[in-house]
Length: 258
Image (cartoon, rainbow, N blue to C red; front, side, top):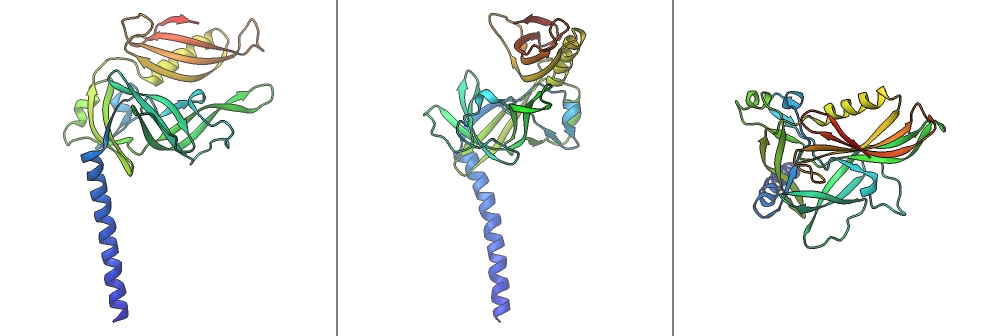
C-alpha cells in the first residue's frame, strides 16, 4: 500500500513538472517583454539541419570591451552571463555583459546566457594566451524548427533572420522568425576576405569582432566593419596594433582601413 502511494505521488510530481514547464513557456509568450534581434548574415544551406536552422546572433560573440567584469574572476566556459541589450532603431543592440545579474534602466532588457567558449589573444613572443578577446554565448534560442516544406525555400536564399524573442523573469523564448533576403556576404566569407588581404601583406592577424551595418559613417550601402589586431608585417614583424577594416557587404571589397 505504501509503495502504491509513493508511486502515485511520483507520477503526480512528474505531471506537475511537465505542466509547469508548458505553462511557464506559454506565460513567457503571453506576457514576456519583446526583444527584436538580428542574426548574423547566413547562407541557410550551411545551417539547415533537416527540419531546423541553427541561428547565430549579432550578440552571440561579445568582445572583451563589453564585459563588465572588473575585480571578478576571469570568465570561463559554462559560466552564466547576463547580457544587457537596448533598443536602437528597429533592433536591440548589445550594451554590456556581466557575470552577476546587473541593475538596468527602464529601456534596457537582460538576456540570460551561458558562455560556450572564451577566445584569448595569443602572444607569439611569450607563446601563451595573454588576455580575453571575446566570449561566445549561448542563449537557448539558437535552434528554430522550420515549417514543413519551407526548407527548400530557405536553401535558395541568402541573408539574415529577423528574430523576436520574448523575455520574462523566469525564462526567454524565440517567438517568431522572418527571413530577410539581403544578398550580403556571410560573416565567414568576410573573414576569409580579410585573412586573404592581410596574408598577401605578410601580416599575422586576429579578428576581434565583425559587425554588419545597413549604413555606416555616411555610407548608404551595407558594410561589414571588422576590428582586427595585427601582430606584425613585413616592415616591422614585432609591431602590434589595432585597426578597423570596412568592407562592402555585398562584394567583400575593402573600402577603408584605419
